[in-house]
Amino acid sequence: MQTLTLNVRDDLLADVMGLLKETFKDSVEILRDKNLASDPYFYERKKHLQAIRDEIKNGKASLLSEAEFESRVETFMDDLERRYAHPSAQ
Image 1 (cartoon, one colour):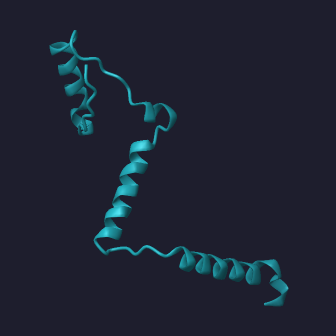
Image 2: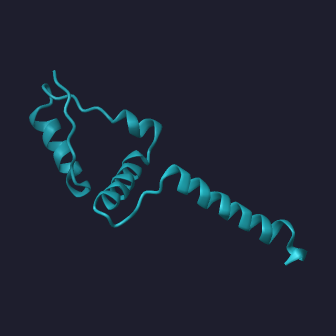
């Protein structure tokens, strides 16, 4: 046997599963994806991350360098500290 992955639209899944079970019941084994057992939101997150990656690749979004990210987080944390650690000093 060989293992394949099929990407099926949600609205056709029941039909495809039924067709496989009826037509190839002795030749095809249907297994649940192991990723879904440990992470039921695997495919939703995968789709979201792929969309982010596509936005970065086509220039709609930018990716920060590690140094720029750290700088922005440090600035943000400093701002939070000034605003909320000592509210009477404002």
